[in-house]
Length: 308
Image (cartoon, rainbow, N blue to C red):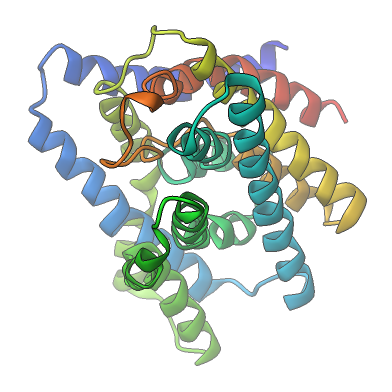
């Protein structure tokens, strides 16, 4: 267990530094917001573009489709499981059910997920990782809006969500990189070196930015609802994805664990909306709580991966 713990601790320390920096007011909130925008708007899109422009997608389009189906079907099932737990376990109304579903299915794939794959996997395949990360906002935005729309009248928002996500810099980086690769254009010299430098910033800046985001959420506040959401996100979601990857789609071994690790990411800070009322108050702490518990759950997961 020492080796997995040694891999997880540096990630946790950088996130903690970001958290403390904002909590101790060593960094203004506006500066922290700028760092988050840099990660989502520049560093990660550049990483996605350069990777896709320089790398042939392995295993063929059929396996890529299986990868995306594995992850997002597992995510949909986790969402449905969250709704069921809220309904039958907590007798929650529509707002709580949708918040439970989002909390159980939507993980922090960008700020934490990229670092987790690149630092935890011994021979990471960045293409498989970025195919999920770059489509994550699009699929989760549509899924969350559609599921919230059941009984709550959100259906009319789907076109706006679709348009917003199609224009997101990370998704555009994926599309541009694939087109660049298809055109077989060169990417060398100072331009490539500059893109590489920016892309490398995605990991440390993303982790630090995650800490600053968590500083705005309760981390040590525990409710039965938030604990249930955390268990679903850190345990049930990756288990469902693993079962689909191994029993249904038979993905290549490395791609299995990339999908599972991304599914094991803690709950995203964006699961609640302005329309959610007091009914979701017990769910909100799952954002900070799941990040805290992820240090332990990811250590266990890495132990299982490295000892297979």
